[in-house]
Length: 197
Image (cartoon, rainbow, N blue to C red; front, side, top):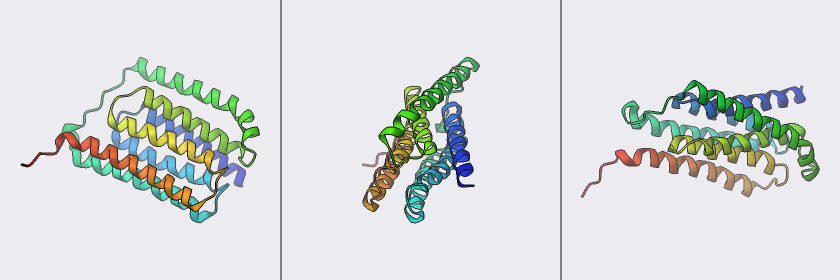
């Protein structure tokens, strides 16, 4: 049962990261980020106790909420994402497939370096790191940059929890996630703020 749940978590991470890569709708992207942290929670639960794993889930949901609230306050008039051409979507799918193949091929060798990690944790972490880098490489917009950074950090955290189980580290990683979301929510809203003299 536990093995099947971990496999479902890896599939969930892959699917939500793919949605973050190809979606131009901010509502779908922020929702996918929230679901992504549910998969992160499941894989972190392998190495950490429930109380510490819940910190990851809550911090991820707060980060997604901060970005969502910033975008709601921005309104549809100010935020107009670029629509992707069909060829660009095909290219993004192909790049995501290559990242997945690289993650699958690197997982056995990385397991030798991380003896406390499970196969699912290593694969999920590598997929998120690779997809986060793809999202960062394909965009210049603040929202997609925030989503790419949060995806990258989520993959890093999955791998890092197999090495370190400190409560202080869990708190710092949660603060980093929420700080990234807060900074990018401000960057989204900054052009619309009026300067009062």
